[in-house]
Image (tube, rainbow, N blue to C red; front, side):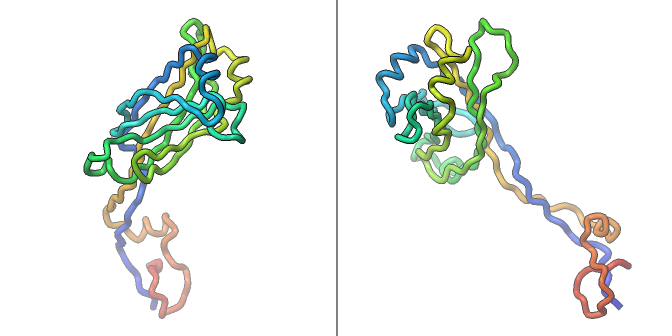
Length: 194
């Protein structure tokens, strides 16, 4: 007769957001900055604390590389102190979103132009982002640029894996979870219905 197990322990592994943060980069004199920073040249935000880490936003107003010319490239750089110890010095898994923000004079809902990505920062000073965030023409023909100024909001969520051991699971719950074997083999070592 097949063996029956009345209870089994189950572990759940889930990605959990451990902290979130936001930063707003206001760019004044956009046209002059675009003239100064040619393709491959960027300007950076100040360092800011968000989601338990230190970051910088890098903006390339003429693209970060040759094939991104004609685009605005945006990157988020992890900029934690090198002598920082503990979890913050290791690998960081983060989800971040860049969004263009309308000037205050426009009464519109949350910005309709945004891009989100999930990435792993393996070390300090590593960057992730969007080489083709928005075309230069696209930006200049929208309501996001006013009086030669624009604003970019960055939302950051740091994600951490953690294992949580649940209570023992009864055989009836195992059936509901699809964990019981339905074979009639007397030598089968899997869990069977009673």
